[in-house]
Length: 108
Image (cartoon, rainbow, N blue to C red):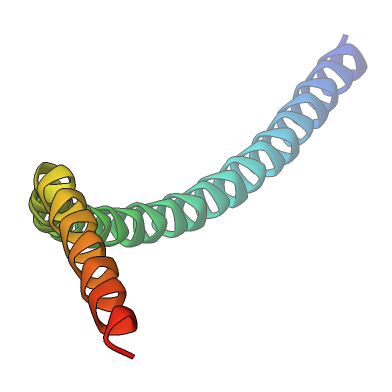
């Protein structure tokens, strides 16, 4: 009976040691996972901040380009709006030059 008690105690001790070894291994594994995840989180936060800065810069650039677009639109509207009048003026000037040329040619 005494031997049975010793065997039972030895089995319990072995089970405890095995449990502690497994537990310590699991703790180390989880600790490494936490460290890796913390590093990934820090990198992701840096990337997020960089992306936020890029977004702000891009939005400012878009606003500037909208201003340039407005200026160009006004300039083009002026050219398009006055195109017919300028075309007529040039045609009239060409006709006047042709008439002047014809008059001057007749003088010779």
